[in-house]
Amino acid sequence: MTKPLKPADYLKKILTARVYDVAVESPLEPARTLSKRLHNKVLLKREDQQPVFSFKLRGAYNKMAHLSQEQLRRGVICASAGNHAQGVALGAHKLGTRAVIVMPVTTPQLKIDAVKALGGQVVLHGESYSDAYEHAVALEQQQGLTFVHPFDDPDVIAGQGTIAMEMLRQHQGPLDAVFVAIGGGGLISGVANYIKAVRPEVKVIGVQMADSDAMVRSIAARKRVALSDVGLFADGTAVKLVGQETFRIARGLVDDFIIVDTDAVCAAIKDVFVDTRSIVEPSGAMAVAAIKQYVATHKTKGATYAAILCGANMNFDRLRFVAERAEVGEEREALFAVTIPEERGSFRRFCELVGNLPGGTRNVTEFNYRISDAHQAHVFVGLTTHGKGESARITANFIRQGFATLDLTHDELAKEHVRHMVGGHSALAQDERLLRFVFPERPGALLKFLNLMRPTWNISLFHYRNQGADYGRTLVGLQVPRQDDKAFRQFLDTLGYPYVEETDNPVYRLFLQK
Image 1 (cartoon, helix red, strand yellow):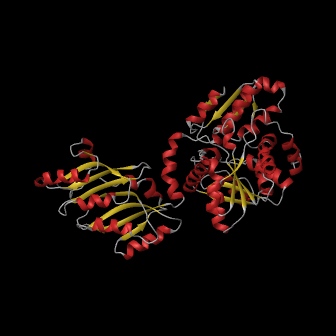
Image 2 (cartoon, one colour):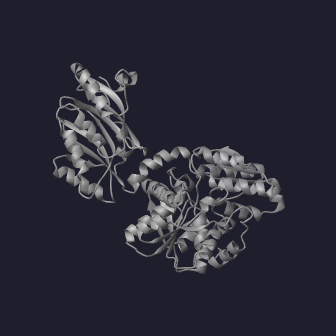
Image 3 (cartoon, rainbow, N blue to C red):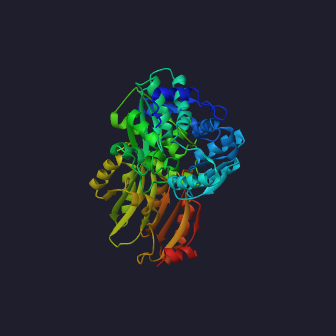
């Protein structure tokens, strides 16, 4: 039986690793804006700038570079959710060998296309890395290929460890902790071995998603624990079962672990963008999310932390979700369900209250309402905030002013679904006219609308969501008696906001009009 490798053994393997035929020494850059906000120095190891936009090519190539000519002649195979696949495909192209890549069917098309472009032969199988792995092992035996493991292999681990070697060479000053995302554990195993061999005082902190925490559970159980399912938002770390070697190393060398959630990762993606103008994938932002959480928990100031931005293979279609959840993840947006009296002037009174909340100006980011009760109106409201914990104070303020309020900032049902479902048929919406407005995104735009309305008209539907543009697309239902047609036209002309009347739109008749 082979004796387990010690940090000194891995140190030698890392120092002699062959990675720079395909990889570059990525920069270690300060995140100035984030550092200022956290009152700690945050450094970003830019593995998102590798040729395949991920660190994975380091370990993959190092493994393949150590294969015999006979093994290279037969070809290699791997299982991967995407980034390791690109590393193997690029390495195989460089070494002139065939590469079969088994990927889960849930892999983003961006990564599938990237592997094919590098010459890899893609086989889609299963819904997770573990499913793809089992199929790859079967193909390995059938076709005589050599398996290139994405994490549980000493040569792969050593290749990833070159990241830590570069970091400690690039930063000579104080370094309190390095934060590392964990999927199967290859990256943190390489980083931990190098750091603990060279600078053991530097903490190595592992980061996992709340819905893909196989390593954390395994450490707690003192044995490898297989998850029945994993979340796929951070698909690069969606691993059901960590490796034997990576578990052994993490258990012995990693100082601490942090669990982060989807909203926190979305906020971290935005933080990275603000400082670098680059968009990393969810797995790539996990370390930054963990640093923010660590600082909030331990109340540190003046410390130096490094985050490995391990990948930037972001599916473009996912950006809408990231932008939607980033503000809530940072708690720069709070969501509420507010009950106001169904009577004239109450909507305007509530809007005036929002404009005069203690603590400074807050913008309305979302406002959804549909008339459904003769006495009470339930509105879904989003507001910008100035920091974490404000939603509770705003809720208390609304209640003190006589508006029953629920804080929905951390309510998944509200964030995922209900905000998009406010509406429907209403028997109370008599004489309703439906209009799409373009509101200017500036303070007072809504109050101007409300002040110009006749007191006898009633808002029966209101749907607005800030989309980040300099104007807001707003859908409004107004109950206007037919005899007020001329006055209504004058109102629209005086208001001066671009609009389209949709009262005769068949979609309105099907889904909103009783």
